[in-house]
Length: 168
Ligand code: CA2
Image (cartoon, rainbow, N blue to C red):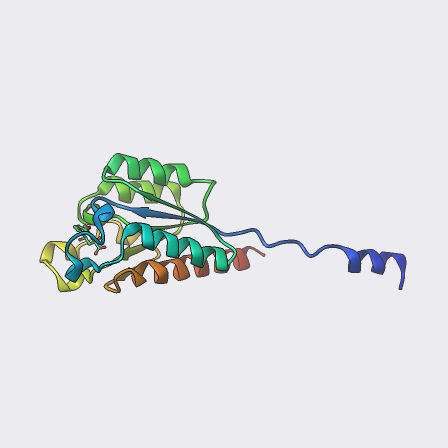
């Protein structure tokens, strides 16, 4: 084997850069598992976050979760994600239906986002049918309970993979 070929063969395979995922939970989602199990299920937010972290780690991804009852704190978290995160998974809770600020923040950071909801927004009150953030997200997953978050993570990782493949 020539010296040049031997060197190429010995070179370590570059490690893939872990996709970085930010999961955001809006107001009252900290109450999950304590009330309204018929609508929102019995899984607590801590259990959802732990399962998301486990699944992300199995896929070689880095994941952080943040919950807030405050619109501005969610806006700050979205703004802070720029340059630090590849994709956002967001359940804006009731802000889904009211928050132009969260919509504008998603637009402002220009990061891909996946909107998730535990309940089926279209099977509930009329006012829940409208999402102000949906148009700034790649897509929406709604109605699968805690599973909506896990499907959201799958979608988020697929988005990162596709974008990276498009860049190479
Ligand atoms: O289905 C979803 O994930 C929602 O984003 C949940 C929001 C609701 O306002 C949206 O329309 C749909 C409400 C979260 C409240 O969570 C609770 C959980 C347990 C007990 C009380 C509230």
